[in-house]
Image 1 (tube, helix red, strand yellow):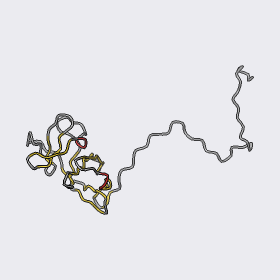
Image 2 (tube, rainbow, N blue to C red; image 1 turned 180 degrees about the vertical axis):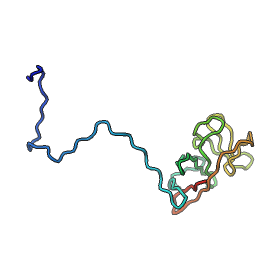
Image 3 (cartoon, one colour; image 1 turned 60 degrees about the vertical axis):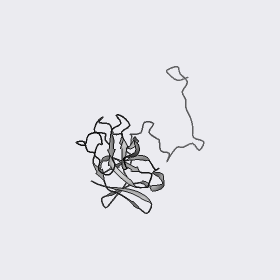
Image 4 (cartoon, rainbow, N blue to C red; image 1 turned 90 degrees about the vertical axis):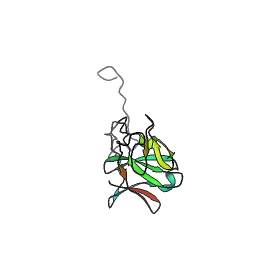
Amino acid sequence: MTASGLDADVRHHPEGTTAGAEAKDPRPEPTTPAAPAPVEGWTRVCPLERLQPERGVCALVAGEPVAVFRTHDDRLFALHNLDPFSGASVLSRGIVGDLGGTPVVASPLYKQHFALESGVAVEDDSVVVATYPVRVVDGTVEVGSA
């Protein structure tokens, strides 16, 4: 028993020393995920095969959230991910399709449609979402800074 009356939990290293052992911080500082490396004004997003047709993904491009889409005919488009009607960064989760032959994404919140080629809202052409150039280099989708 110790002076406080409690049994001390003393552990000994089998070799008798712990020299060289490094303690791990039980509460490490949160880390910021590394952003994809820019390539001469282009940001690598993902391998093309990981971008499913009729789906979108979100990527950080020059500090901005960008939604990248692949259509059923393998065309690629990129829009700013912020839905101007709701203020939420959700366009990458929208439903990809077409309206009268125009490729669009429907916002998952209020269902407004945005033309993937121009970013114009179909229901209100005074609202436009920024578009970004997209390319594939060595099988990797890249988005250019706007």
